Each structure stands twice: as structure tokens, then as C-alpha cells.
Length: 152
Image (tube, rainbow, N blue to C red; front, side):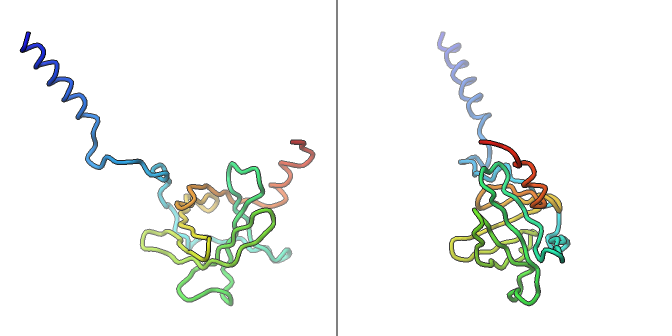
């Protein structure tokens, strides 16, 4: 009887340890974040000469028209930054946040309350590690057409 109890206890302990990982710990909110697959220096930010505006990157799964855009206007870039980042929520545009390229191809920047750490899966999808948010590139008229004549 003691042998059976000892074997059961040993089996139980072995099974409980098999679930442990070497780097076990609390999962971070970005544990499922995408890897950076494109060099941000190769992205064309989509400046529209007629409207004098850049392509917008809309926050996915948002009820509000929240978007970001990037400007690579050399006259307004700070030293060592490759572009400026602007956050727009409810029509209010933030100040320019200069973004610097890191060794692992992230675009990072911080200014006041705005901090970002962006990676790009492709030229149309970005992920911000700080806010754990996805952005998709789109055109304003096309985006607004999804909501035209809708009642909420």
C-alpha cells in the first residue's frame, strides 16, 4: 500500500512539473505581438499632393475614428529620426513625436503622454507594443464609406 501511494505521489509530482517552463512567469500583454517583418525605412508613407496629407493608419476595433499618420517631411525631422508620428483622436491632432529606428527595426519615440514602439508586419499593418494595439493603413473616404448611412 505504501508503494502504491509513493508511486502515485511521484507520478503526480512528475506531471505537475512537466507543465513548468524554463522562463515561466506572468505573460505580458504583447506575448502574441507580431514580429517585425519589414524595415520601416522602406515604407512609403503615402503623401497625397492634392490634399496635402499622409495616408492614415486606423486603430483596429475602435468605435472612435482614431488614427495615426507619419510624416517624413525633412524640414520638420529632428536629428536621427526617420519620420514623425501624429496621433489623432476625435479630430484632435497630437504634437509631432520623432521616431527613431532601433537595431531590431522598431520605430520608437516618446513625447509628453505619447509613447510608441511600432513594428510593421507589412506596408499596411502596424503593431504598437506599448498600447498593445493594431493599426491598419487606409484612405479616409474609403474608411468613412463603411459608416455612411448607418445608425447606431
